[in-house]
Image (cartoon, rainbow, N blue to C red; front, side, top):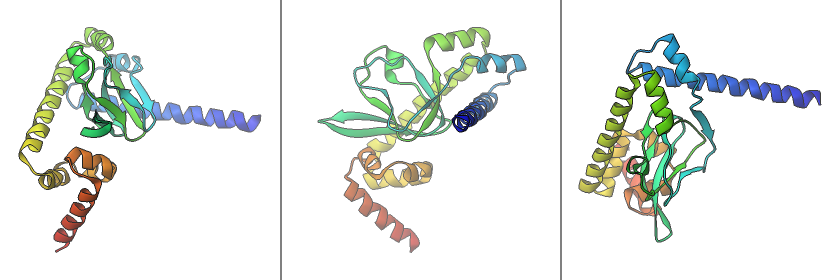
Length: 214
């Protein structure tokens, strides 16, 4: 009984430490854009915005109304559609990136899914939470608008890139701009993102690797 109690206490202390560190990450990110007083920092921390999700969790399904937007503190998330029963990945997100689902903005059922590719720790936002925070800290509104603008710009860049480039050029673009994704995202998800088969992607990677080695 004593051993179980000690284990439980140790786990609680570890969870408290993780939550503290994640809260600090949130504050560090925000203060990169705007300054915060000690009182404003406490207001943000009291919102309990941080939540952990295990790998494989589906945050949003096709046909659902999205009530949340997300900011990734730790982990990797994926957008995908189901086409004739097959998953087609359209975007990946990692640490310090925000996700505002189209369904959240348009108030319409989602056409795609969002899931966790890794164990993830997220900051959850909603209209009510955002409204309460902005009422108490009005300058946060400019940060929210900037994050939304940045996301729209990134989505447009991704769309233009896919429209203009071949699968191999898309892959090379990923290697240059987002190399961490290549190492973290499973091969078959990358393949659907590029619009090719896993076998074709494997061959392409081998060919590119050999070319770079010279």
